[in-house]
Length: 87
Image 1 (cartoon, rainbow, N blue to C red):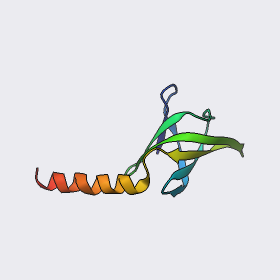
Image 2 (image 1 turned 90 degrees about the horizontal axis):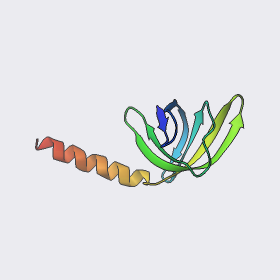
Image 3 (image 1 turned 45 degrees about the vertical axis):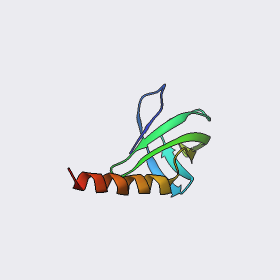
Image 4 (image 1 turned 180 degrees about the vertical axis):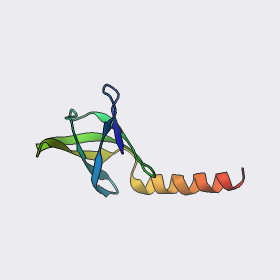
């Protein structure tokens, strides 16, 4: 999974936890609190704002507030699947 910010290079991330309104990641470098990020995974795309970034055991643990709740993303994914059936 990759974390992307507007002003930095993409970095590998490990998703530790996810809830309808937030996510917790482990990343190798610090990201400034307030930064907008995009998290890309194989079957996951999240957009959020960094609410905390703490150094833990040689890495950083990031808490994100999601810009689009997971329920909405799930609904969009279902709608997209329905449209692709007609193509």
